[in-house]
Length: 339
Image (cartoon, rainbow, N blue to C red):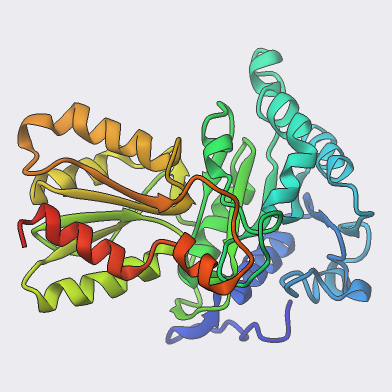
């Protein structure tokens, strides 16, 4: 386990980061089930335990047969993981950055996602693909894209995007046990944000959203790093007399329609906020569903906030303009609330 992972003992909640929570989940899953494996570039201890140190300590504990550092060959990483999954193992494969999933798209989309369908249900691919992304660190156009819409569009894949340490641990435990491929999206902003986690935190079901903050006037629907923008915006809106309810999707696909629709039916207004490019993004699907299901109950059109249709800029001033800011959420909420 990584060096900043607290020892989990029965008792009060412990403070940990999302990174430590993922490490704790991997440690727990591997200890309980010898079929859980870890693949990826530099994931073993002799190479540092992953680019973020998330897998540090695992190879020393469980050995090189179960924690395998790989060459810089994303297609081979996923191909080997698919083969292991079909053979009865539960591999957790790390693709260092989400942009690099493009190298393995054939393996992910045409093999991992479709083998259950193409085998008539005889083959399962219980594979987790951990991957890191997100703007805000000046890593530019080939290292920071949120590409979840591609995978949400692909039948057979689940897409998970935690925003806090509790969800990082609980969702990772569920992802490892899921019989189908899961894309597990990590970001620098959420991975190192501290939070309190129940030492006995178990699996959190995939496909279930959380009402992170109750409200009555407008629903903010988000996930991953943009949850921070929503929290800050909600505090500013409260000062202006607007009560915002925040729904954290947690799982982007399949998304929790029941929780989202119940919230929007109550408030009558909705804003979908994500870091991914606004055009053709997950927010379009969510907004369309809300309009179809609640058209006569809405007090205002559903709004979407996302990145502009361009590559992630390198220059800090442009990167800040690229990202949705709390002020954007506040301005949109005030507009649809008539303030």
